[in-house]
Length: 408
Image (tube, rainbow, N blue to C red):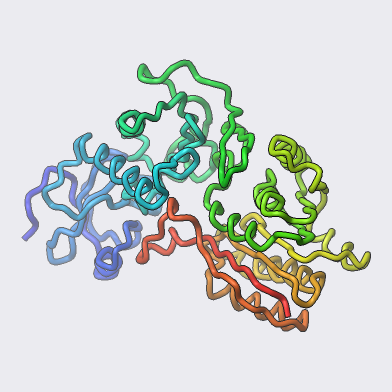
């Protein structure tokens, strides 16, 4: 018999029950077998098994195929404001543990991995950048934003502004509008400039939190960039898909003889060049605006000599339907890089697509190496930084694959 609860009750199939018990927080519409006739969009809803066993509670979404995003399996939880305040505190405490006291540039909240489904919060100095992909979280964002500012204030860190980057199409699947701009509240000062500076690994970057890609920067590669910097000393480096120059700058700072940074976007190339000047590294670097797929074979024809090539492309696939096409793209650039490198050269290569699994990525790398008639000696296999934590039962949180090889 179902326990008495104040929230709307949903019943799921055996399949749905298994998925919830495995630890995954998403309840899809196709596993729901019974639900109330009317339910407020974004409300808290309870989920029960066919036998009436309480399985958990979360945000209900009337439009999304992810009908309920589970927040807790505590039958005594009331989901008052204090619940969301605690989740924010836990998230910040975790980062202080795994990152130390330097929270100047990091991801403060990583959605499901921090028990706040559909919410991303990045910190760049005294600016927070948020993205909300859940109707329920959207209704609670005032509470969450205030809690973020309060928790940081307790650490002596002031927040000058909160930029909302809700300019992504996936919000429409939740019945939410797209927009971007400064969040306005009494506890925040007048909005600052959206162009700010951040420091990572001792390198200063200009970050545009309003118009830059994602939330303005890719924070998940922080320690992977350090890994590259450690092997770059004395080497001639080619950084492909450089964006604002982060891998290239780490290589230059690590003592590379010379670094060439490449991106198809002229704006990205210009920003990377500005970052090089800002950090006193411009004399060790040059910049090319080009399509990497075209450039790599051109460099091979010219007989260009690089000791280290870095491949950090954007996600070639964002759904299962395009995985085969993505594999071909990844194989092409990795094959070209392996052919361009001398025996004993080094390759840093990554994929930021969840759908390009680690198994698929490794299989692709082996096939590219076979075609290039080289062997790969593994130096390191890495993932995203610890401020982007992976829940082992939620594969969607495990997306970044990073490998360092020597080419033999």
